[in-house]
Amino acid sequence: MNNKYKILLVEDEPSISSLVSTVLGNAGYQVIHAESCSFAKTMFSSYVPDLVILDLGLPDEDGMVLLDFIRRDSLVPIIVLSARTDEKDKVMALDAGANDYVTKPFGSAELVARVRTSLRFNRRTNLEGCLPDGRFALRDLTIDYGARRVFLADEEIKFTQTEYNIVALLSEHLGKMMTYSAIIKTVWGDTAHETSIKKLQVNMANIRKKLGSRPGENNYIKNELGVGYRME
Ligand code: CA
Image 1 (spheres, rainbow, N blue to C red):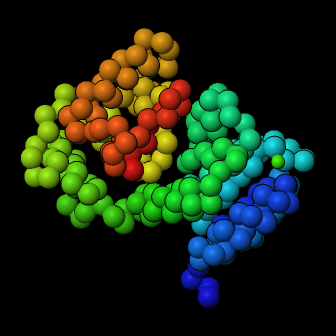
Image 2 (tube, protein in one colour):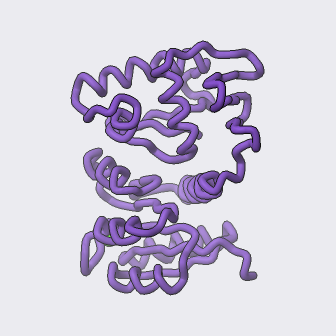
């Protein structure tokens, strides 16, 4: 089978790497394993994986160094896997270009779901999945980028300019956790301080209300408190 997705797993903890390898192997992925930053750099260059799962606490260097190394010339999806639960660490990894962040301990099903989402997101950046006429479609949600109009099950939703910009931005990065600062920088050209975060949260509350979001339901936009938003 040479049509399997290749995943580079960078993890020094044997119990976790064997668990992740088994779980992803059973899900049909080919897993290549590296235990250090330096070995991972070699593996990354020679195997050109479709996705990288990266532990931040590695024996030789911090995983953030590898993240920077990969992002210098590759858009490959990177899922950070870490015991660090601090929101600041999540935000730093996401702003440095990680697509997603999974905190240990994690469930097998959750990890596989995140891998699948990140791989799908990567295909979308190659424009597969976007409709040919410049439209975006996700379940009942349609966005007409040319006309800047949004529809939910054929009914138009009236968004303000700012609300539309936020929704369009999240849709262009489907599946990716967008940090507050990344959204604020793109939409307002501003830095993330208390007032701008408040402004984003107010807009987001209106967007979610207009999209008919209800807690516990299969909503379009997920919020991770203190980190950011993700369309999925
Ligand atoms: Ca580690």
